[in-house]
Length: 391
Length: 197
Image 1 (spheres, rainbow over the protein chains, first blue to last red):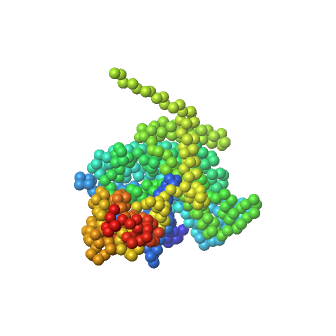
Image 2 (tube, each protein chain N blue to C red; image 1 turned 90 degrees about the vertical axis):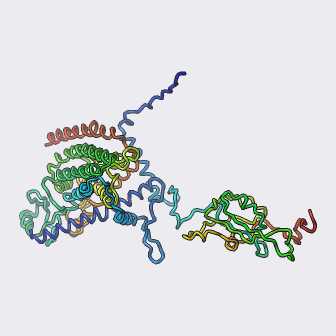
Image 3 (cartoon, rainbow over the protein chains, first blue to last red; image 1 turned 135 degrees about the vertical axis):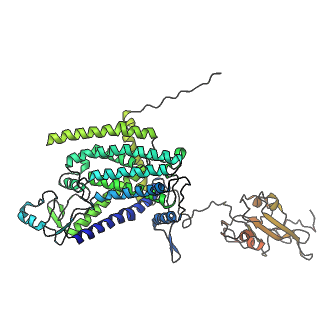
């Protein structure tokens, strides 16, 4: 592939992912969290922040609140405790937010985009350059060389999902460092709690997905989606794993009912106690980006990623009739489908967050080590037996 | 004396309850139902208890105590006779009155007084309504249904006689619903300084 195309497309993809996650989804999530909780609790919700245009106060149903939040956080005093480690104190929120965003590098948001070709005949299965339509035969391999393929995924790593776990594991360091560097006993305790909780749930998070790798026979996320496109969505072959993944994912984001690292009555703000201004804002944002990341992974692995039922490479296929769509439109629909699935998962996570009361710390740990871990191991064993039997 | 301890048995939980999953689903169902009802439901089925305050205001109860007003007589003078009952009753001591006598040729001379100065410090006022209760002439009322207009100047909250008389009641009038019987009116009970009690 041309180096310029590679560079431009990669930068475009990075900008797209950053714009979608940090620019659109994270502020929307802050808004949705307030607004949704208001709806659940029979309130109106925030609607004060507004722009005055021509004497009318435009509030856009509270959508400007995240903007006001960002402005507030930028202008607030950035306080560092006198005896704190200034360097570690500053680097902890950066680590947290950077790792949260870095997860998106391997998440595919649509099928391969073909440039310089109609794309009508080209189907790249990635593995062995197979043709979707056998009647095209040899011409398929020929056509393969003509267009420019742009995988809509920033980095198609062959370790795929393992990279996600590695990066998510690095997120622990941010929380632990923040607690350690603040020179505050509450921060330290909160950081320890965050670290132990995240390390524990990372084990479960990884093991719940092992069953899926065994079935999909790959670690690359785009190949997992292609498997689901050919067969069936992952949630139907790994239902138990999906439920456990949701538990572990919520625990991993450290939100209610698993928000043990913070606790007003016990350890004040946990590792966030000594953070203010934009450093706090980064921790705040990383929490929301993590929700988006884990929702995106859930959508990719269990709900077919960009795949929509009846949508093929060439358009919609319903009961034998085809509605032909241009290649660009199909890819656009795939991106929208993927984002819609992510939104649904985010909505579900918020719903859970506003439904359940928080656990006690020992309950969180015993849920992880005594229930979820054995269950995920059993799930792997059963999946292995079935995979062996089916072939 | 022995300490009596009442032992309360833990409620029995079935296996389904102990597994939490169905219970969580039930709870989620409840919050989701409320979420959809309040977000997408018809206006009648919404159960939202709060309002968007400045744009959307609730109606105050009929006896809501707003800022004070001094009621007028038919000739436009205050009904107040400067008896100092309100300033005496006021627990916040926010009412200041300087009584004055009418001119000797006035029919009310020697019969009643009028307030030369009548100032209410609305910042000190606690809106208890005791002044309204204490007033024998229905001269001070809190039926305006209004809040104090906001200001950054302390002086703006010292409401003098003219200000208090310029505020209408909720019905828009400056009078009071209770009629006043001036000396000389046919409805006047006939008790005045000349005729004696």
